[in-house]
Length: 413
Ligand code: PLP
Image (cartoon, rainbow, N blue to C red; front, side, top):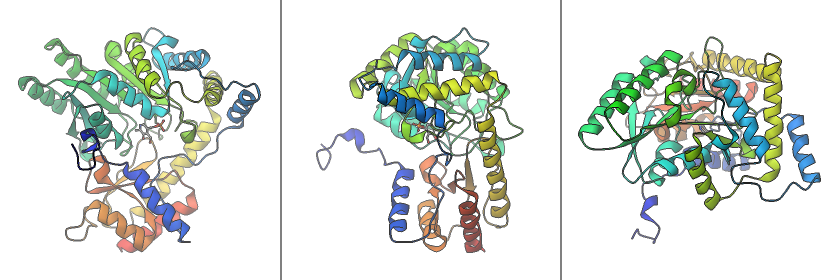
């Protein structure tokens, strides 16, 4: 029994560092201090009027009863249609293969809970989104971190995946899930088709010598946030032969600036989707009924935009993100101690601060020092499996970005 009588499951699970730091920033702001908050990963653009209108209509029409656990039929079909366009080389997705969830976060949680047995390995390339290892632990799995290097553009090397799978097999351990995230939070790395295919080949080789199925959870939540010169490739577009062992996760939080609405989804073969639906049904039922009508409107807008040859609003947002990314890079590169890598997608810089550390300093202590001295809030890279880095989100207005970055650089001298 743990000290206070809480379940042992929680002993190794940590609180989300971004949420904790955000709390510190709110307290500083409440004391009247000016803080440039670069911690949160949420677009600062408003939700489109058509989406809001659809929810208001749903309220007026009393569409406020429980919905099917996996989502209203129209929304599941719209997700299946959208994803079928992305995976054009695959047979079309069916609505029954979609589970609408409370954000992409719950979709990943549902998948891990449906797939992982106690002690099985969940392979996570680092730097990773901070919730992956904690969710794997909650599902009683063992997170196994696979390092990537900035020199390889933070991409998982197929050789490392091969060696890891071989070594696990030799030791009689089961590799159950590989979690891929492109574009990545926190690095902004975007895998090319060839890089994904090389990983897919290793998975197929592994599959040919073991009966245990290795699932891929491909978290594609930043799909639409790609910088010029890079291209989004969905894992299953690159490796269609792995369809029966891949869960694709996506949602509206980042692409439609709908973080607080909590709309995400998973696409996976029907039998697994059914299991995920059972989990969600016992934990929280279907997501908020009204929000689903807004989500449907958002997907309709995306479909119309695709037919019209491009989404003008998204293009506008991406050109603004690109402007901010370039300006932040320009200001931060004035410092001789901050190590920069230009993100290919999403809206984060993972900055190497090893040369900025005081003797013995950790990333957490560094972030506290920057918060106190420069009133700039950053997230310590420890939370992402990259302890000599800090993550800075640039989903913030240009003025705050410029002022905060200038204060940070002048503190570093
Ligand atoms: N996956 C990644 C990589 C993320 O960065 C986030 C949110 O920050 C999520 C999933 C969760 O997204 P949602 O807000 O849809 O739950």
